[in-house]
Image (cartoon, rainbow, N blue to C red; front, side, top):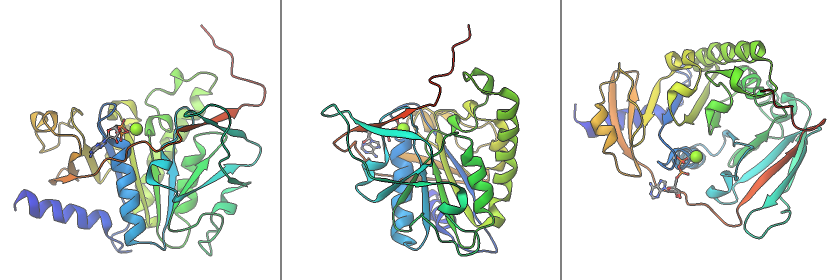
Length: 283
Ligand SMILES: Nc1ncnc2c1ncn2[C@@H]1O[C@H](COP(=O)(O)OP(=O)(O)O)[C@@H](O)[C@H]1O
Ligand SMILES: [Mg+2]
């Protein structure tokens, strides 16, 4: 089979919606600036065009400039009730009015029986949770919801860090439990008709148990190739910006292209005030 034929097979699997086969989990890795977010936005955009009736959840890091506006205006923002969130205009300074709706529970976002709720198809549904690990609860919730759902997580290391103890002010044991839950839930997404598409700089930064649940590993220039992969490290090291190797189940691999999604102006970032202030720093 030629590389082109294998690439077509891989792309077909990534776009497949067959309940007998189910969903999948995918992880894209690459150093900063190699196009991880662009690749994720590109796939979200492709899903929107091909399956306009499906819901697409988008996770953006609350610590840096917003990424979801790079796709244009096709997004809505949903914020957990009780979060003190505003948006800061990085281009001109001062606040920027980004409209958002609030929710109390995952049932407000999507009802398991009807598949309906605040989440709307045909756009990115951006969620801001008080606790980042609520993404793991969302995944569990979606497994029981009718229809296909897609969850896009930019910077997965924030959700299932390899070493949760490094994070300030957090209960390490609880985070370890949530990491385990994530791996278990992602094992079930195949049956739950959920597609989970994620990225991180290096897969050494995320909980290792997730690696065994992946159908796809996508490599951008300079990322470390898994020892089980048939893809050669030197091939990944010499990739161009916009090129990506995709490994499917360590069985076959393909090479695909994705366009850049340059930052859109105005640039803005969320400002989230935590009740009680920032957790104390312990030295
Ligand atoms: N295929 C591409 N063609 C042209 N420019 C690209 C491409 N992919 C990414 N870029 C540009 O490179 C920069 C970094 O991309 P980004 O997706 O933010 O990378 P990362 O998330 O890995 O840091 C952005 O300005 C983006 O527009
Ligand atoms: Mg990025």
